[in-house]
Amino acid sequence: MNRSLLKKMGRPVLAGVLLLLLSVPFAPKAHGLDAAIDVAPNIINVGGSMESFVIHTNIPYVLVDPVTVKVNDVPLYAWKRDSLGFFDAIVLMSDIEGTLEVGMENAITLDGETTTEDPFSASEDVLIIDKASKPGLSR
Image 1 (cartoon, rainbow, N blue to C red):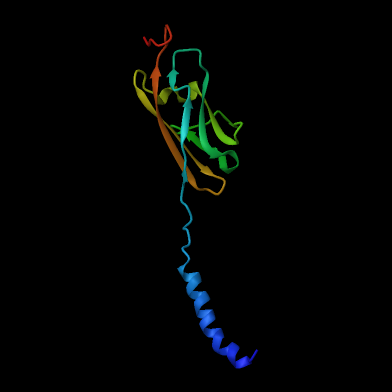
Image 2 (tube, rainbow, N blue to C red):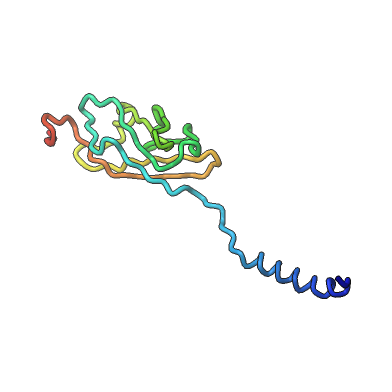
């Protein structure tokens, strides 16, 4: 090919490639993780024999820095990876009982950071009771 033809075509082609690259949208780095939780059980009996409860998340286990995770500003008792590979928080009743108000729904909030220091937070309202004498009755 003729060298002058390449020279003439080079600038418009380079300009076109540059324009194409500048028109491609770049996604900004996410600040935070879209987290959701499911507290199990969904009714917490503070006066019963329950020693702990589990908070299931939709966050992959490998992404969570477990030492940063707190429930209602209380550090976790333990954590585990569930069968689907998600992070589960284990909360000791005696650790969190002081943050709960009996006889009403309470917000259970899980906060923490990923291994890349991105914050996450999720909350769920859970009914708190004190001793159920029969299933379905709270007294």
